[in-house]
Amino acid sequence: MALLPLVIYPDPRLKKKSLPVEKVTDETRKFMDDMLETMYQEGGIGLAAVQVGVHQRILIMDVERGSKRYGNEPDEKKSAPLFLVNPEITWASEELNSYEEGCLSLPQQYSEVFRPKEVKIRYLDYNGKPREEKWDGLLATCVQHEIDHLDGIVFIDHISAVKRDIIARKLKKMKKAAATN
Image 1: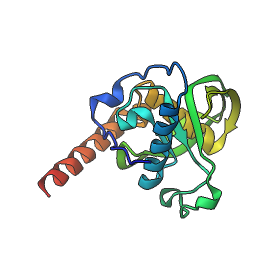
Image 2: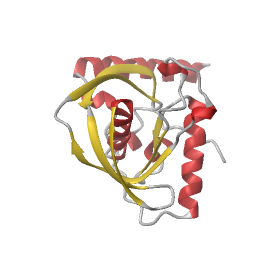
Image 3: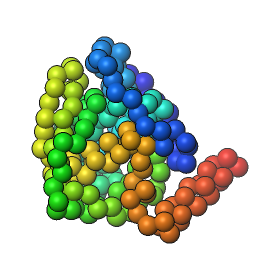
């Protein structure tokens, strides 16, 4: 497995819509394994292919393993990775849930986002088998966040323009500071 470089906001690649995967192959599975290793290394709970510069409708998640960001230490024994190819939301509840979201492509930036509390998702799994799941809670929030990435949407697109501008300015400062070091 290999670590993949993250695409950091405001990189225009994050705004580009991803294309469907025609078939899950060994190459697709290797790429998903690399994505998973990258996500674990970066301390995330979800990662879309576009976040590593690949515009294919692929995402991976693991909300069970834990992350310092979410108040617990990573625990490999609790690992429960999910691999979703061509995911689509087929149903969403009217009831909303709020969550303070963050993103590996917007490092150290968080904001409360409201999303449907429950969703049904149709996708191909790691082996290309069609699946349909109904998820709620953090899993529902995470999958919606990652599917947004596949559609060229980042979580700050769901917040007020004022909050979005504050985050964008913070990220520009961080980038500038990193370039001078």
